[in-house]
Amino acid sequence: MNVMTPKSGLFLACSCITAIAGVGSIFELTSGQPDLGTQNTAIILGLSIPLTALFFFVAVKDAKANLNK
Image (cartoon, helix red, strand yellow):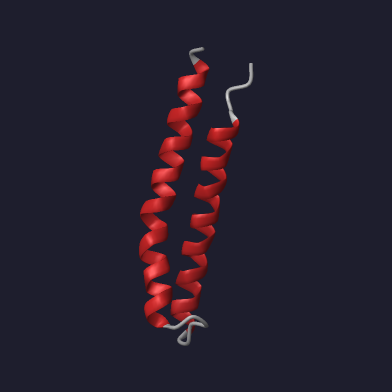
């Protein structure tokens, strides 16, 4: 029984990408001189945290919905 659909896989991939962006932003900010500038890197970090949680939640919700089918 395959639970993961292409849609839930896409949301999970987006969650991974935003999580990587968040971790990268933390490292950039702690280095002292971020390549994209402090403001842009902080914006990326601020957006990546809630987006990671949102994408993961939607991926799990979609997979659970397909489990009952």
